[in-house]
Picture 1 (cartoon, rainbow, N blue to C red):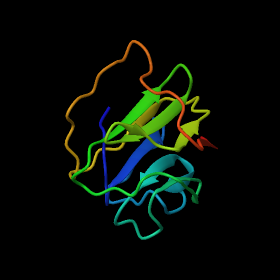
Picture 2 (picture 1 turned 45 degrees about the horizontal axis):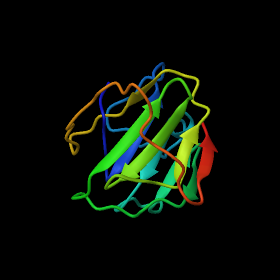
Picture 3 (picture 1 turned 180 degrees about the vertical axis):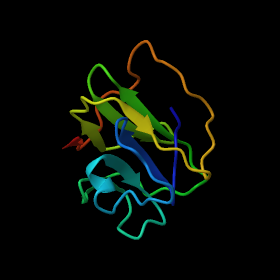
Length: 131
């Protein structure tokens, strides 16, 4: 598993989907198998979580100097985003597939660990998008 950003996107893909080199998360057919948090620098908008080509706005606009975390809970099927330790409003739920974080050369992995319990709580004005 690798954690990745591209143009400051944090992306996951269904494990069974074959990723081609130089693909784009937002172009068909890839967008049907990928969810990504589009941040600063994305041509299709900022602060949105995209799934199936649709964006849901609500997360903080980020820059590459901020600490960005993604917490995937395979038991609950959720992917929750944090910016500077602050839980973001838009998260992904209903993930019943095995997933991989998409690795790109613009990302540095600081840690990857299995948590004994989720670290997130409720965020004001939470919005869930379905995988």
